[in-house]
Amino acid sequence: VQLQACGGGLVSAGGSLRLNCAFSGRTFSSKAMGWFRQAPGKEREFVASISWNADSTLYADSTKGRFTISRDNAKSTAYLQMNSLTPEDTAVYYCAADDYGVGTPYLLHDYDIWGQGTLVTVSS
Image (cartoon, rainbow, N blue to C red; front, side, top):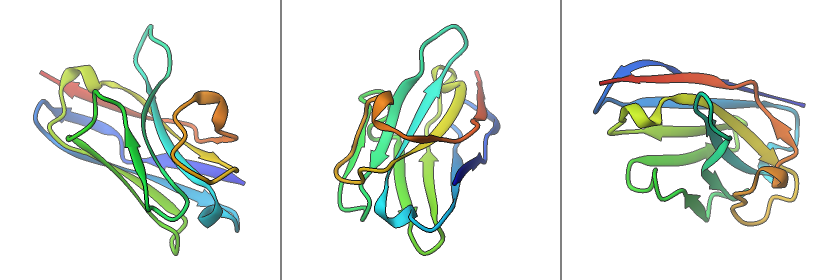
């Protein structure tokens, strides 16, 4: 089982990016999914999460109203749409999967599988 995140890049402040997280395996639809990020010199922090059936989502205060997490269980893919980006959003973004599946976990240790990360750089 693997997670492959992509979609990062360089964008100007105020711009948008969409990150994709592809899950290889047969049990994607039973897992809650989350996005985290880690800026240089800082700890990894929660960005957003979505329950296994997408009926609930959770966002960090810093991303609420600007970012949208979604998923397509038929494609075994999770997404993070990021709008109104600021330089403070610059970080490596990681997707993660939680085997438990219920709810919208937000703690690092809730997640069992991690992707390799994709770099998002927002210029001022």
